[in-house]
Image (tube, rainbow, N blue to C red; front, top):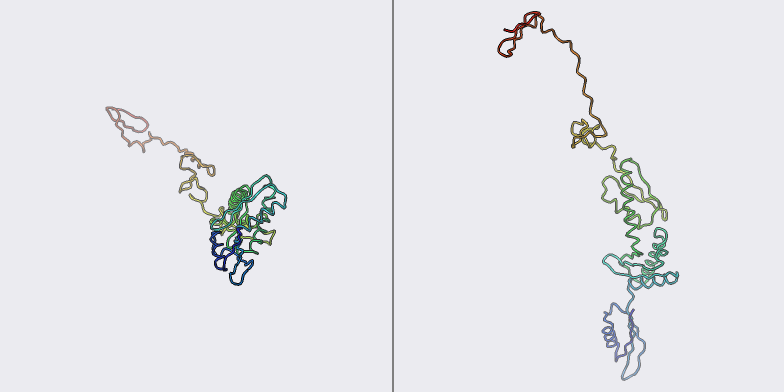
Length: 278
């Protein structure tokens, strides 16, 4: 924080000169009158100090805490529209992260308390170390989708292990647009957990294309054929019925001897038990 002392003939001149020197506005500084001298030719000395911003308080507290813990790492901060992002790097960053980020969450919570006590904090403060939050988000998102499929297929609720608010927020966000399941937080801190609940019907209850026996590989008639011409594994083609044996008719019997057939250059006639060509 910047600080300066200015002496002038009056309070207004001293303050204006101090603000010009610091490059700040009156709303950004604290002003204290140090002394006043003279009766005829008055002199006023003012002490102008830049007000502490949430950004300054947060980074000072985190670095001081790291030093008190005896860890070999440092923190840097950047301000975005939605939050203050603190990045920790160094040899002992893993120690500051802790098991599944529990130490990191504690440091973040303490920082929020300190900043809120001294200033009006209008943004979130997010502390990360060696991109741990980003890696953890990817792992939790993959896990959430896997368990959502399980819940939708079985039609049963799936309860996850207790998680901190950051991890629960990741699970909720990963399944926010899933039309087959919904997520709810249950329990009390620090054992609060998420339950993935299937919607009205599960995958196994939904009708399949091509009939109940055909599955997704069959056509509309459900005959077991796939579009590529092969049989599906779910249903094999029905065996062709064997032809029935019929007793051959005696074409030389008198009652069947009325057929005439032209072959070659003559006619073929059958009379009774004999046939002649003429």
